[in-house]
Length: 342
Image (tube, rainbow, N blue to C red):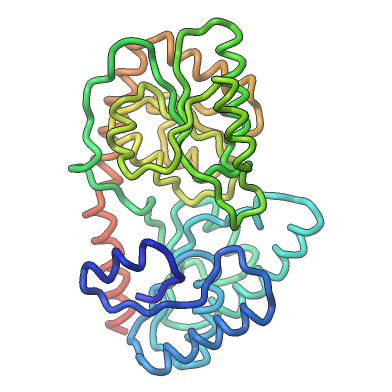
């Protein structure tokens, strides 16, 4: 495995998986730095001579895909886990970035013995139309999977109901709308607690600031839990899970985990989010960027425990049917076998 720096690198090595450290930064924009990362990937592929590379997220897909062509790697799997902000926003800067990224995708994905794994059909259709690769190269795998033994369904906690937002604290993840909805409901005297799970993403320009988090903490509108590893326990202690994202999601893992925990969900009617749920059955959908609609949907579930229980049971059944990690792993291995048998 080859990744940028971070705590995940130590975890990889702890499993005795050979690890190669890249100078990769998700948000890096320095041209020289990006050229050096690309050159590093080229050198690594030439040295390792892999039969197949599996590229995950935008920069590795673009840089690794082009490097694989230059170095003659026989087979490539490109995992598109959401199109990101470049395909979601419409300001001038984003339109320029989208055009550059689209051209780079054309270069990276224009080859034989390639499979592109998408997490939802909307992303597949959008990218195949813009980039022009053959549809038989696309594979639909619904999400990254969830360990159903870790994320188990438990009875809802009693007492004041809890609505929880868990994600990177980015504007496009809907964090401002969640806080605004919490403020509206508290102002109306709705008896509930609202939890914010996540941390500032200093490398992302759309991240909330530490000052904003402190201000929210001071007002008491939301409880700030910060970054947490015990997400299953937090969901078990919650009644409703909320993700009002308008980011270019693939299939948000937090929604898969919430479903596995048997919790009712409120999320947006956006590609990725709506694909991860059964609208009206396991989740309520609201328009993006609409704090008032979000507050109404959260309130509808907070005051109706019977409805939450019914939705939670349906959500767990959905997770067991489609999101078990074993099922997702098997689909990826099938892709490997198909490419390596050609």
